[in-house]
Image (cartoon, rainbow over all chains, first blue to last red; front, side):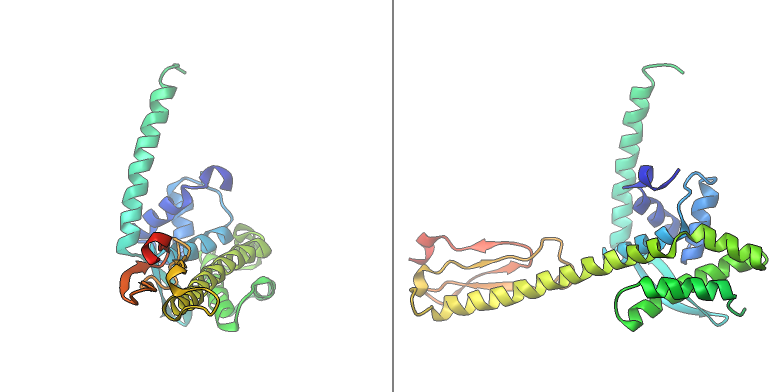
Length: 108
Length: 153
């Protein structure tokens, strides 16, 4: 699944991955691919601007770490980001329930 | 781990496509470098691993364009705030002092900043009654305040 169907949901997925303990870009990208079983096949390069956008919005904060001579930017959820994640999850649950209810009208 | 040549070339192309100051670009390039080297290490290194990691990353120009769009958005937001500050100061001064060809009592005070502005969240605008010269209210950036003519005449 490419970028188009993910539009509007990528933020929720990224916030969740950071909340689940993926702290740097590579780990976030790897987890997204692994957990979704390759469903979300985005170029890695598109994830980073999205992470920076979430920082700009105040949903994520970042700091630099120096791990074995390699500078890494580490991300963490802010209280505002947690609120936003809760909001998006509620919205998603409602949306999913609604779609399921409509699809259930016709057995397949 | 030393940086493989294809990664160096890739990052150079990526850096060239980025806009903004040196520090800004360096921070982004460092982050992407760590990503690429992590990916190569996870794939047991070698030219094949390097190619795979660069392929997964995608077009460096597309990634750079994503960062550049963000930077433009930040600049616009900052300009919006600065513009609102200048406008508010000018209108505030005009409201207090009055303009030569317009009585102070008839000056409307209007201040506006983008509602989504985050560059200066604590920014407030003092709205002063031009007649009494007393503070009427303090408005938050992103709100609009207009004194009706009846209030000021």
